[in-house]
Length: 101
Image 1 (cartoon, rainbow, N blue to C red):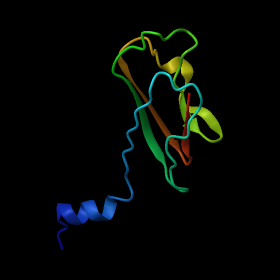
Image 2: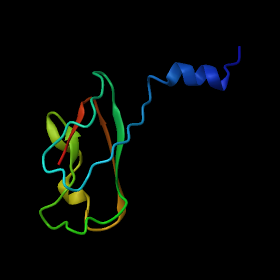
Image 3: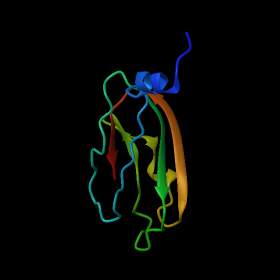
Image 4: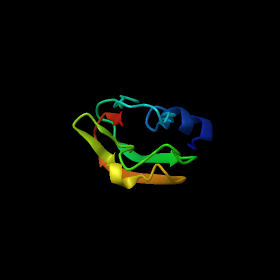
C-alpha cells in the first residue's frame, strides 16, 4: 500500500541527521563537536562564516575532520575566516566527525 509522509519520516529519522553547532572565534584548541555512530556516513559538511573574524589572521583557521584525519572534510586553507562566506565539503566516509580548530 501507499506510505504516508509521516510514516516515511518515522522510518528515516534515525538515518539522516543534521547537526548544527556554533563555534566562537576565541576557541583555541581542537574540540570534539559531534560523534557520528559507527557505520554512519558523513554526506557533507558546511562551515558558515556569518561575520568576518575581525581579529583573525593568517594563523587562524577552521578544520573539520575525524579522529584519524583532523582535516578530512574541511582543511585550513579551504576557509577564509576573515571574510563572510559559506564553505562546503562532501566526503563519503565512515568516521567520527570531530576536530575543529
